[in-house]
Amino acid sequence: MSFGGFYKGKRVLLTGHSGFKGSWLMAWLEMSGAEVLGYSLPPETNPSMFDALGGSKKNSVFGDILDAQNIEKTFADFKPQIVFHLAAQPLVRLSYKEPVLTYKTNVIGTLNVLEAARKCGGVRAFVNVTTDKCYENRETLDGYSEDCPMGGHDMYSSSKGCAEILSASYRRSFLGAESGGFNLATARAGNVIGGGDWADDRLIPDCVRAAEAGEPVDIRNPDSVRPWQHVLEPLSGYMLLAERLFNRGAEFAEGFNFGPAPDDVMTVGDVVGKFIKHYGKGRAVFGKGGSLHEAKLLALKIAKAEERLGWRTTYSADEAVKKTAEWYRSFYDGTDVSALTRLQIKEFEKQNGTIRD
Image (tube, rainbow, N blue to C red; front, side):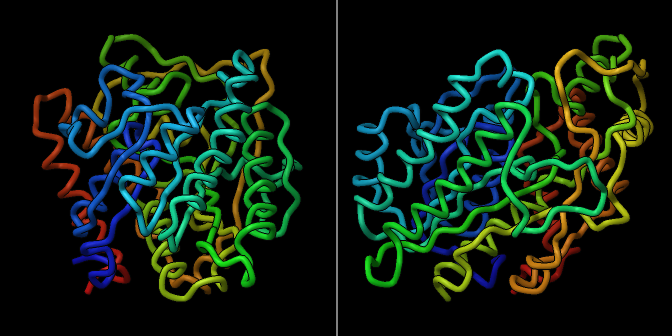
């Protein structure tokens, strides 16, 4: 069992389980012996990671986190011990088109989930997943640490900054030593890649769609720098963080960054080049940016997670891209990607070494 067998028999509620990251996390939690219930909207893409893994309705509740009554009933019926909150409107460019939806989902939706957890009783650990984009971006490669100010130019980034401020306020208002309640932490991950993402306006899905259609992929900002990492890297951090919250309490009820090692921060163009190489087909056309503002430089400092949680990165940038290309290549070749996903999780656990018995 991974994570020292901690998750065996634990009741875990996961919002956003039908999405890309949520589907990977659901699979890993189930492999770790947890009793998992997912709450989210139905998959929004076709194909989807949820369907590719044979997502089951028996451990799913399909609903909106804006439906406070429904999510409170779900919590009350399931009585989770641990909550991972991933449900969100996660796309920067969509936030320009749907600013109200973005704020409702990422702020009010988060509040609804927090309230449901508080009212149901029995929750001991709550990990609210936000983003590296929650920081006020100063276009520097120095990297943002957990005590940097919240901000955000676009509506997605600023809504996630608000979710961070909300979480801190909620913790102080309702979850202190005198009030009791669960231990709440936030997790800020860099740009995630891995098999099974088909969202619009994301780099790897755009590359895959173009390659499979025999067309070039149009890259808007090839020189932009992001903290790219394989999806299993931050998920391992979320799971370690929840274990610490559950067992050791308030000392871990803070914000934590999860990103790549400094040497593995890459430009968009670098990632595209590596992906096309490992995927075995495709080509790119590099543009000059779009009309909507997108940050040029993003990097995270990860010393806190390394020192406090014992978390560490496992894959180099090239390995992360290679694993991602392998997954998509297998999917389009008709391979059982459900088995491949579990194999990649096991390979990650073995190579990491810190999350096994």
